[in-house]
Amino acid sequence: MTRVKRLAAVAIAAFTTSAAQAETAPFYQGKQITIVVGFTTGGTYDATARLFARHLGKHIAGNPNVIVRNMPGSGSLVATLHLNNAAPKDGTTLAVVGGGVVLEPLLGNPQAKYDARRFNWIGGRTKDNIVCATWNKVPVRTMADVTKRETVVGATGPGSRTLTHPRAFNELLGTKFKIVSGYPGGNEITLAVERGEVEGYCGWTVGSIVNRAANWLHDGTLTLLAQFTRDLPKVPVARDLAPTEAGKRAIDFLSTDVVLAWPLVAPPDVPADRMAELRAGFEAMMRDPELLAEAAKLKLEIAPVAGAEMQALVAELYTAPPDVIELVRKINSAQ
Image (cartoon, rainbow, N blue to C red; front, side, top):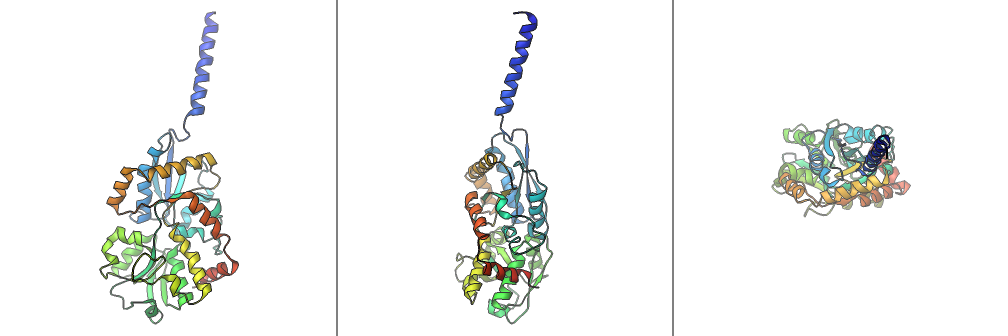
């Protein structure tokens, strides 16, 4: 073989080897994943996103670097719209958003121009109970008391249970919650309750309360007016308080946020094999002893919800009876 032919053969072999390596290299090798969180720093959504960011990369082939970007606004609607409209659809941008954003397109929010079924639900940190509570110095002890006295609660904005839940109680139970909207996140509402700027917080997750001060659930710091599951003893269940069957079904519709409470979600149109990889990585991450130890220190409960379960629940919401959706729309549009 001549020298020229030998060089050509070496070049072809090198090219072939390089091409094969490129073809078999993991997609995420050398890449960065951004987790957009729809709330401000310091709250439980932010803590959840940062916990994911510290552990997800090591459970995905290629070990990508994972960072967090806060994008607060309208109860995480801003982050949801970014995920739908602007984020790359290749699995390099994910999000932690409020589960309530699933409801907004169904309830006629003109800003919510997306179909939540098209998002790719990777998994959830845990299911969570949701409560409506007031500070202990506020002279109400039951929802019946709130039908007689105006009670001021904080809210973020459209796309958030902090707005929809007190409106639901006003419509279904005749309560007199006055809603002060515009807080950038739950952490800011909590601070406002502590400072006396508002008197309570409806749509408050038990996980967030525990993260702030677990004793608040038991020492009388908070008056728990209603819960959305049956986890807490001696606390009225929202569904049971609704006086009509239609009202109970509306509460059931809103209660789906219990399952979607702490999600990791990807944009529409991410390739199926990439989604399988992300879901498998998420499931492995949630079994990681290092994540479990860190979550315990941060007081973040870990009881993973499968992405497939979340995806099925979102699809089911879109098949809700028209009368239920109409009632919840009425609740959502109330002033």
